[in-house]
Amino acid sequence: QVQLVESGGGLVQPGGSLRLSCAASGSIFSIHAMGWYRQAPGKERELVATITSIDTTNYADSVKGRFTISRDNAKNTVYLQMNSLKPEDTAVYFCYLDRVVVDGSIYDYWGQGTQVTVSS
Image 1 (cartoon, rainbow, N blue to C red):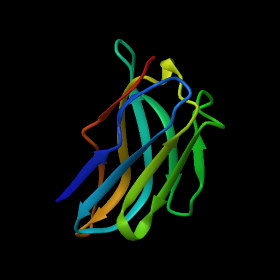
Image 2: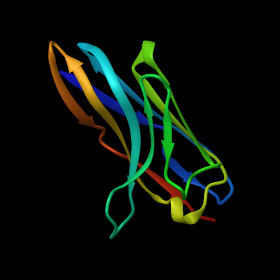
Image 3: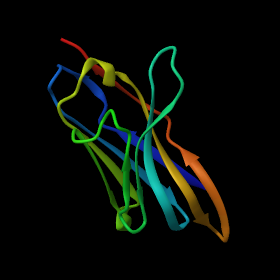
Image 4: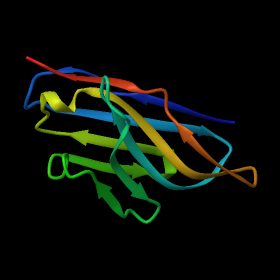
């Protein structure tokens, strides 16, 4: 029904930047909210940032002022601009789509995850 394709992860030095993208395709009528979560080794998955259909954003305290979430509704794509990256940002980043209307039904979706490694 709906496929998510994440891209943009990689290895970056501390202080560097990366931009993650997550594009959704399929019979999508609407998406309530889109977001990014991350999971570091040995830790639970945690919220990074979310953005609603009216562009209301929410950020984890640990990334405020460094990360920016945005979305392109026409492309069903969510972005995460990550600046001033720190080693503690190292994790697998997952995009999340909340309350996606597909053929009259509502679903939530997770991306496959993309690795972000911050290291010198």
